[in-house]
Every structure is written in C-alpha cells, then in structure tokens.
Image 1 (cartoon, rainbow, N blue to C red):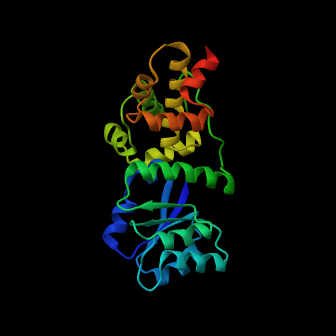
Image 2: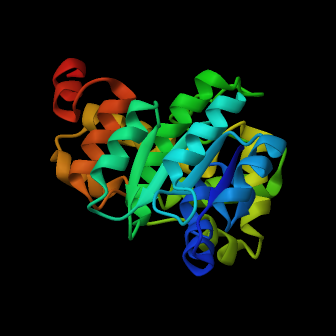
Length: 249
C-alpha cells in the first residue's frame, strides 16, 4: 500500500478529506498529517511518504513553497495539490515544478478515485511492487483464505452492484482495513483494482459473446457512468469497447 502524508491548515477539512473511502479502496494509507505548513516539511522528510497531499493556500507557507522546500531537501515523492477555484497562478507554478495533479474543492469521491488510480500507475513505476498483479481469468480465483474467497465470490456474483470496502465490511462483519490487507496479502492487489479487473474481464466477455449494447454492458458491469466505463476500458485494453467488439467478432 502507498503511504500518504496530508497537509492542511483547516483541521475539520483535513479530517474529512483523509477519511474519504477512495484512499483505502485504492490502496493508500495515511502516514501522517500536519495542520501547520511550517512544521510539515520536517515531518515529511522524517517519514518519507510516497505522496504528499497538500492544500495550496495556507498561512505562512503555501503548498507550492512547501513543495519547493521538500524538493530542495531531496524528497523525491509525488505531490497532489488540493484547493479552490481561482488560484491559477499558484497552480501553474505547481505544475512547472513537476507536481503530479490538482484536485479542486470540494473533492468528490469520483474525482479522487480517478486521480488515485492514475497516481498508482506513476508510483508503480517508481516503487516496485512486492507482488505482481494477478491475472483474473473467466472463472473465480481461489486463495488459501476462506474469508477472502467468500468476499470475492460475492463480488463476482454481484458485479453489477456498487461496492466499497465499507459496504463489504458491513456485509461480512469485517474491518475494512482487514479486508484491504486480505487483498494485498493473498492477491497482491487492492480492492478497487480487483473490482476493475473482474469488471473489465466481464465486459470483454460480454462484448465478445453477446450483442448487448455497450451502454447496457456498462451497467451490467457496475458502471453507472457510461463515459467513465469507456475510459476505464480504453485504459485497460488500449481501445474502445466498440473497437474491441469489432476486433474479436
């Protein structure tokens, strides 16, 4: 799992952001946080997280200045800025310094999840994974964990439903962190990546073996947003769903 350090001078805003489910679902855990940007650099240098999420506008030291201080000290992690509209000059400086991406407040779960999935691609190149990503076949993978097998069987059978670590935890009476660790330990992946794998595998199967409309396949694979489904499919298969269907039929 990737380690995140959070910086924001507003405690309530920061606590709300840190608790967003997308972090855990995408394989990110908190390595620490700081409400004082002047003290944050020293803490980050000591902890050395994989990525720093920081507010852009803060008193005494803004996010770009914090990023500049850390880069000068040799910190090589990624940076994500979180701020409001209208701060384009600071954002321009952030990207000139090779910042990874920028989130606009109020941050939505969908925007955060999309960013984290993209960030995982960058970090996977910089930080070798301990286990390779599993190939999800047409039939269900079995592991030596009975708990995980029950969870994956349920997910596979109910692929069209919306799932989260929290909802699965409630259903199986397990802590979301524990479930996250099951996926990491036995499958070498994250919950959200596993869901994407099985959904994309099912989407490819339906495109190949049925004449269902792509929009219908999107819904059957758990994607209420048709355009987001197409974007994910293209990222996985390097072509659109329609192009895939034409190639395999």
